[in-house]
Length: 173
Image (cartoon, rainbow, N blue to C red; front, side, top):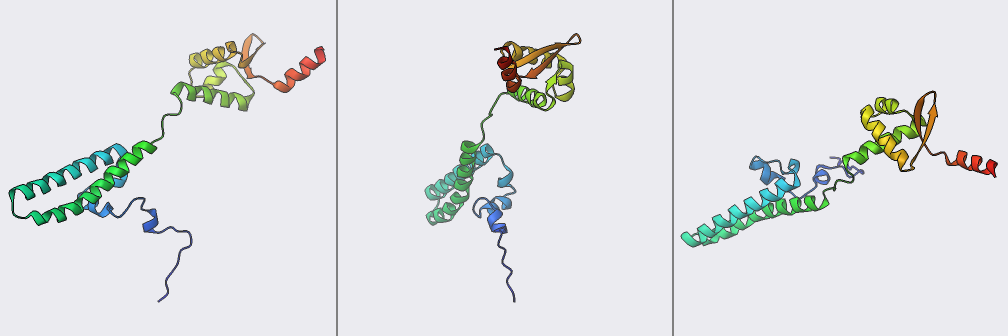
């Protein structure tokens, strides 16, 4: 009987990101891997609390105190779900930039590709409306970030061309 070895490390055990408690949660009808980190943490706390309350009731009100050891084993998956949820909340990516900055980045990316744009062209190439593109282009131009060129009765906005500015500045001297 030949045993096939895989060198890429892709096995079901290596794909499972956290311990073997997935079987415990699936027997309860929960897919813990697909839950959000917050839901995982809450599930861990609720399950752990229920186990501890059940264990306390058995110890206090019955003669089956030895069942605390059985209940103790149910705390491990609950603790694992809680720890996984807290780790996911800590590692959750923060919103890097506000949505307005995304639109500006989109506009500047198109401007880099096309060279120069009118507000109408910017609206056609991006998700911005003509009014939004016009306002954003004017604001960038007023801040000195864009070069404004008037041609044929229209305003064209472009990124500054440093090579051209150096050539023009050098010829004037």
